[in-house]
Image (cartoon, rainbow, N blue to C red; front, top):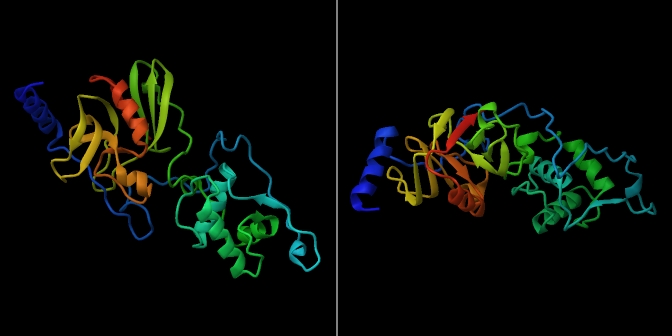
Length: 284
């Protein structure tokens, strides 16, 4: 494309919504993006079963601490390094509540999780094994509350909502604010799904039906001088694009209105499949 063509596209973007660009907004004191727009849902709203957790699991019976008494049989090991799944997300979320862990939840029992478990155990006079046994789990249950959906999926990976009816025909980027996910759909079939992040209260991501009008592979924001790789512009300066900050910090920040994607491989594939003119639906 010649210089006149590029200039024309830039002018079109400016006319559609001003200069382009989204950048990161810092989190508030509570760790959430600065005064987010209706991003939270009631923390105790039950979520649908996911591939990580096909059905609700039962709690481990409390043995009254008998397993930790001298001479008693060793308590049953529940989870250990290398395990993964929804249960590990809950373990990590509860450890976050008592300030023994600060990453994730990732759903993987990694070295940082084992170290957090050892710290929690040592503080309470339990053997510092780094594995989560029934006694450790009961002590943690007694000190924490049931984590809500957002606590379990601070780094993404939550199940997507059912598609909005407006997404069921044609080629559509179906973006849900309630589940914080993007579905790429063709004629009602979901091709791919990925976690996304939105703008804050003061620069909210617009809701409604739009169309991709400009693709910019190596885009840099003209407002904030920040990179917006794989940008798919759909409403003025708002675009779906990769965010290195989202990849690093999860939902501890916000964009200036864009739809951030944290998986660079996923957005690269999506960028190659989406065409100018494809529909974009942003909904709750």
